Length: 67
Image (tube, rainbow, N blue to C red; front, side, top):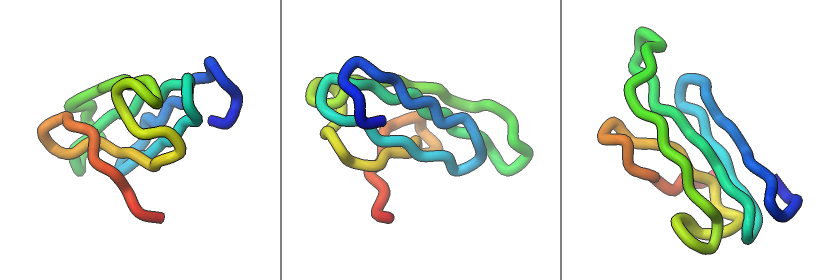
């Protein structure tokens, strides 16, 4: 997302999201059967780096993604 105070939601298999400073992301981790395993949210500039793509790893931790 690009607008301040916005929220990006990524909920598919191998999903990813990014947000500008002051905005947030919510990302899920699904296994290969598409079952929901983890969900996590973070605020850019506080919990995650702004303008950086993130996904969740199998432990439910944020992982930077290169695109």
